[in-house]
Length: 183
Ligand code: GTP
Ligand code: MG
Image (cartoon, rainbow, N blue to C red; front, side, top):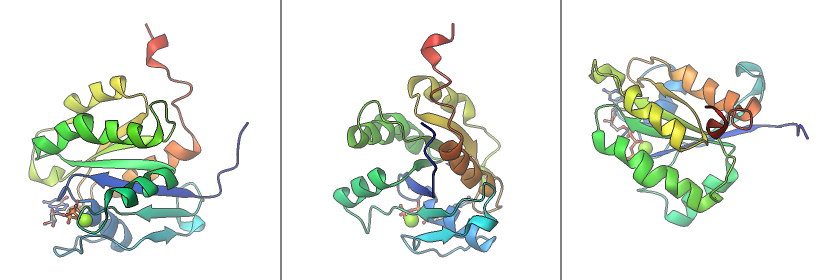
């Protein structure tokens, strides 16, 4: 069964202004840029500089530049989705369950196996942690592999975000961990 994964394609989605483009550019340049374009160029990180030694492609999404059919194509093409929210934007947290996770199921099928990472950006702006409200989502949506809080501005946990995404594709836990069986 073990199919050999040749590469990892990471798609970042999420509401406007949560910091998707900043996250990607912070990872690539190891510094925060105040001014970023709406959408980052697609980048491929060569195998030898990624933690799991697999070529990894990172794809940005911008509602300004892409329509729905574009977004759906990208969702179908990728191997893992990072849904980015802002820890200081309550609406962007709500929309994880009211919009983004259902939208992925709508696009990929209810029982889809594309792993999802929930990424809470802008932790530099608050002392409050959101993981308490995020963790229950992992029970309701088995496709959510893990969640992580980070900051594109201070670079906190930036490399972890992409490492977790890679790991979710190469070493998925979803088939092993079934919340319904855990009692
Ligand atoms: P769209 O492309 O419009 O969907 O937005 P986006 O999700 O790509 O967000 P973008 O990277 O353009 O960032 C939006 C704003 O948030 C910009 O002003 C960034 O400078 C700011 N920002 C992004 N990440 C952080 C962060 O970690 N901390 C802080 N304080 N600001 C951030
Ligand atoms: Mg953007």
